[in-house]
Length: 301
Length: 301
Image 1 (tube, rainbow over the protein chains, first blue to last red):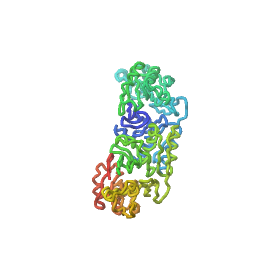
Image 2: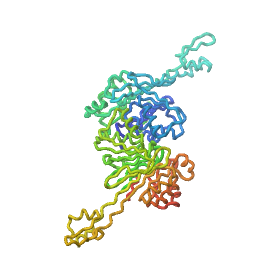
Image 3: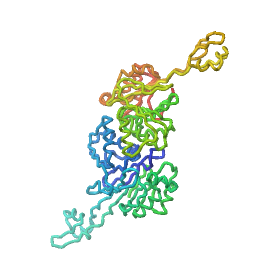
Image 4: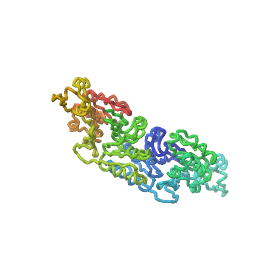
């Protein structure tokens, strides 16, 4: 699983950096999470193939999280895209995007499936054989969801020495990897545990932006490998965090601690802070394994 | 008059450059002409004060000419803007911008005056004591206007030596600058031409993007100082220009020649062309005083 942070700043594009957008690479999928203005250029800069993006997840309808989407769709069209595109986001997104196409007398030659969200409890919004994606209801000024990405367990790993020892025919391998025991022709049963090794543990990633401090989040994301949690403000601006329904670094760290995640990434920084060390400093007393997001940062886990 | 080109590329933001946006500084006004994605960052990069922009002119509703506008309005709000904002553009623009505010549960604390355009003939859309702005109907796939900016004649320049010679009291200066003659107390009339010098000639700027070759443009912009005309394609792609209702460099030069403008600036280049010398080469045989637009280029005239 790879996380490519394309933009991690709040509210407005600036010379400091880009508004929110991320690419999560997970089991052959390239999921785009939020799409602030300028995301297209970030995708090009980091050589991410537009054609590999088939699923876009929009947390909420504030401009710094989706004003790059209309242009991205126009560019997909320009590039001759034919593949279907799935867009997950709050109700209203479809109406906006269709209106933008209509006033420009434009259309898409590819089908867009809009998955409009209105639920207030976590639900599964995407599932295939390898991955599930669920919503994480957040607490913001407008209807907002975070997203929880979970790999499904991988197949068991064939113990090549063991199958050689037992002289097991290749025809059985598919079932063995699925965890089944083998019954030899002489009737002897060989337990799967003798023939396979544990696969790597499935990974999980929780994306939580934008939100006020919302302790319930930690119940929904218990034990995830990586949590990206917004930290728009420092404690000195806690009154602004409360007023605008954002979080401080300390609050983000408390969610990470309560959820017992492995790694916390802080992002969605207000551009009022020219240096970001203080975010780390304020988070570490509550949760030690914390990193700061940076535009262009690529994390592999 | 100063023209600051913020973006001069067609269709899509890319690593080559920005989609269309320009700032025209004319007699204390800072007019924003088109506003492709990324315009905000270009404004910041070139240290153009957001608070000085009170009039925005949108040629048409293709994304590369206005997808930066919703974010710019959001940023005006974030910066605490109180001054009224005037937006001139095709009918539909108001509906789109209001819907984007509505889905984000957002609003503006400043008044936006939408001047929606539907006319097919040139009309004056802005006028004050110093400047007029008119539409230039263009020929594109959707309803599109170019814009013609004309300074009004400045006051006549006082000939300080002459007024001293005639011992004319300061109380007359205001009227003299307005072109009036002076009647001395002895009844002698002194012609204004003896007391003043010609002011600098009023400047004019015509912005024409996007459009197919449209010879009628030259009648509307006769003798302007500067013409920005789109040249999306080279002659080798004339079939694409015809199909998409854009112009070639040669066609832009023909319009400049027929209009007898002083300077032609070519822009709105397709990003398929990695080098731009050929645009100059194809234009010069038809019109010699031609320059190529560049992102960030500042012209004073």
